[in-house]
Length: 131
Image: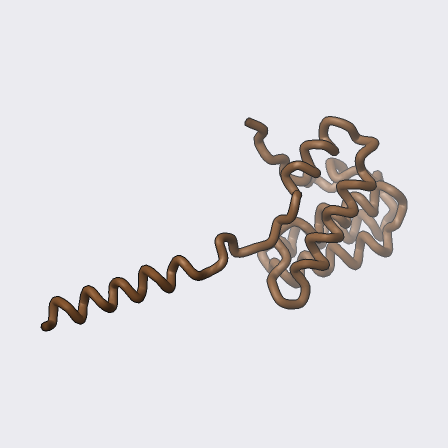
């Protein structure tokens, strides 16, 4: 009897585990979009639109994946929109407190109007490996 109840508990747990979401965050077509952008920098507008779509799909029901606000901020900063970039850097810092030091540097750089490239802030957005 005890063995049967343990097996039924394990069976229910296994079934429930299979019902959950497959990933913690919604990444949309991020990998393909980033790859296309890296291969052809003129695809920045399309990559920016994908990042905005990921944010729109995540807020407010799910947490936006780490780095998405920051990457969109860097794109906005590179196109001259420092106030939009700062707002996104602040969102990244708020959503991901462990990024505070990096985002503070990015915000300071954007406010001072220094070099607009991410490398100038000492931080470069993460690139996904290609297979």
